[in-house]
Image 1 (cartoon, rainbow, N blue to C red):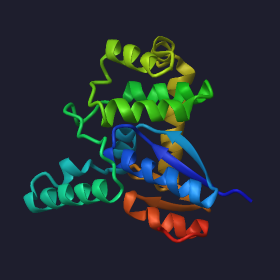
Image 2: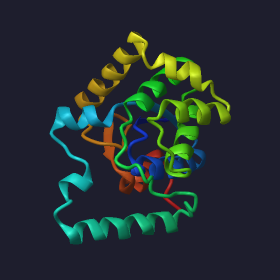
Image 3: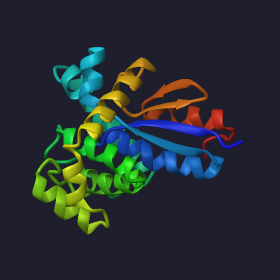
Image 4: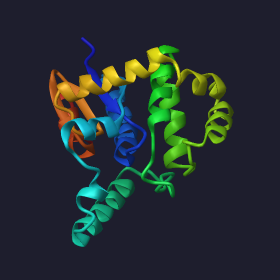
Length: 203
């Protein structure tokens, strides 16, 4: 029986980018299937009282320095050489998250996430700019104009709210978060645990 990894995802998080790159490899090795669930990270933070690390630990220089070291280690370990920190970080991903929901409704969510990760975390673009959004997603094979228009659809807006509320009800307080066998896992550091649960040791 194929196991499913439910991935609560928002392009706002560099750690979601990191996790997804490695999670795809885990899915290939274990035969598991990834189901992406777009959420609004800002909404999750508001509902849970959580904060982004750069806010929560911004006044602890040693912590911030170590987080950068840890990020660099992960990048090196997994050869994520295309990654670069987006110069517009922190990102307002309301439009991107709604577009992810729209892409899901269109049956192209995985393609949208792949394109979005490239545009945000490899090309370093300002994706809350409507013109950039339309041009760049279209260049990567998606209908950027259609997706942008769909972000104003009441059903799309409602679905993003519902997804975010669902995540919070499942105990999610940030992304990347995963559900495997009804268990919650948070952060890229739990990927080895997920692989163990799926039946193989991390290589």
